[in-house]
Length: 133
Image 1 (cartoon, rainbow, N blue to C red):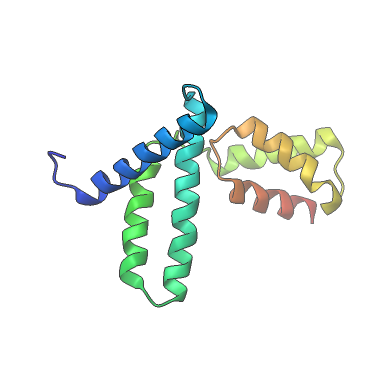
Image 2 (spheres, one colour):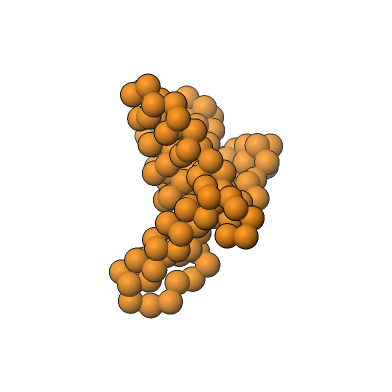
């Protein structure tokens, strides 16, 4: 509030409300993973909105959503380097014996368990598709 960053203030207020709502839904205190899941959901919703605003010719609203994504990303753990993600994907594919796209679900489940929020799901999906194709 003291910094005068209205975009950050509004975004953090929305996240605070989302965290309180999630706490009420679960009927318990939130864990760190619960809180990170709420933040990731907020980022995903905003990225979807950015796409829709751009398609609708509303660049100013897309820019506002991008600013909110930047604020939320500050509260996520550092993302995994591409090389490390590629190595995990290759190892899981080799260990599971996956040979084609029909095995993608099992590979995705294992990789997402290992990266545990340190990599975006769409990035993981793209890497797994690339390796299995």
